[in-house]
Image (tube, rainbow, N blue to C red; front, side, top):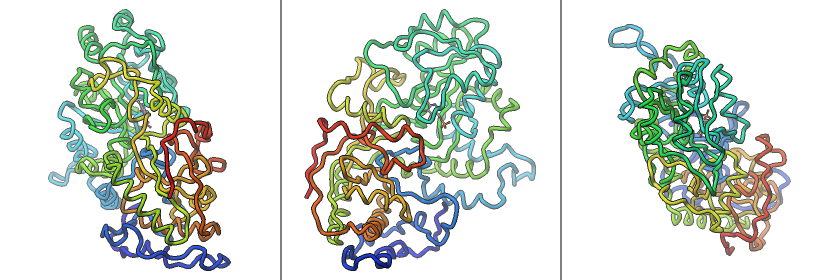
Amino acid sequence: MIADPGRPPTEPTRFLTTPGPPGAEPGRARTGGPVPGGSASGVAPTAVLVAPARQAGGPRPVINATGVLLHDGLGRAPLSTAARAALDAAAGTCDVEVDLATGRRGRRGRTAMTALAATVPMARAVHVVNNNAAALILTAAALAGDREIVISRGELVETADGFRLPELLTSTGARLREVGATNRTTLGDYADAIGPRTGFVLRVHPPSYRVIGLTAAPALADLAELCAGRGVPLVGDPGSGLLHPEPVLPDEPDASSWLSCGVSLVTTCGDKLLGGPQCGLVLGRADLVDRLRRHPLARALRVGKLTLAALEATLGTGDNPVRRSLRAEPAELRHRAERLASWLRQSGVPASAVTSRAVVGSDGVDDTGRAGAAVRRGAVTAGPGHSGHPGYYGPGPDVWESGLPSAAVALDATLAAFLRRGRPSVLGRVEQGCCLLDLRSVPPDLDPVLAATVLAAAAESGTATAGDLHALSVDAPGSAAPAEADDWAGPADWAGPGTDAGSDVDAVTLH
Ligand SMILES: *Cc1c(COP(=O)(O)O)cnc(C)c1O
């Protein structure tokens, strides 16, 4: 979706003044004064989201109120205004592969590559492909061929959507040389495995699981030194999409730190914490990047002009919705939840502001929920010497799993299905008999649209009677399915383990 600057900023509020659908009992849901955040923000709320006339087909816009900041089912990172504008600019014909100064063919996406190289000065060369999986395939094909990729048994992961790293790597004809054990791998294990058949050594930061207890893995810098001494490249996949350390996620590895540790080549995602379009970034030694770029597969994995445009714009500004969600202050989220809930109550819709926990990723959301609960019970503690180390690897709670403090609007659970089918659609979480709209994953300028959509859903459902929500408990977001998981088309995994964690609640008091 591309922002339409010409759209009148008041348009989304039309939801508010539209009476309920024919048949809805008058007075059940009524308009309740100025929309929260509407005039105050002065921002055209959702030029980007609310465009009913254009929604005949194609993807439906969804307000992500799940509290999962990077939701695989919702397309991961929402793009910045700058990136949306860049998409528009690139949509026609553009200079993606022509140097307008000379009139000759230029390197494809040259300005995006320059922006990426400038953002990560540690990288001597950069390349961009379709996604991180493509970056790994290309690396395997170009640097290993039919030789061996040395990897720890603790890093042979499968993600929630059934993506298996080992199968991806071997699909290129490369062989895996597994070293160590699931929970412990030593530098000596790597040293023993490296030999004439080694293509490269791979270090992966598994996004969605942790081995806890008796664990070990060599520090990244030590592994890099070993690889350099043996003359084999060390490839690193930190996955998260961070190019630099993120203060809110101190244990999450980033590309620059891994390159500083001596990793030869880093692959990572464009649409995770970087907040950009789907793509895979390859950063590192010039000779290695060059081998990737020259491999025949590179042509099949290359990105389009739209991706390049959105990536360049994302790199050009430090501000994007993902970063804002990550860094939002709990007090600010609480304030938004209270304002929304109070406005809804005035409009005849039972609603309360409650505390909540948001999580960064939806990858393996079931497990994430359980891990989050465990962290808050104190069952998981960081091992000594792990925290903050640039080559951090191994067990220990991090915010990816244990959640960020958040606030939500709690509604009657029956509204979830109406909200999901609304325009825009709103996805929340159903927990303990309530539909929670977690605001950390909702850009603040969408609050008025959210309010209007809830009101419309309440009118449609007929549930907007004056009444009190019963007291409820709220657990980590991963412990419940996205709203109405039964007919949600996403991976079956997301149905979740249900709400069995009543003993471990972020206590919530409702008005
Ligand atoms: C997310 C992730 C991937 C997959 O990236 P895509 O861009 O979805 O292909 C691979 N490795 C790690 C460590 C990840 O976190």
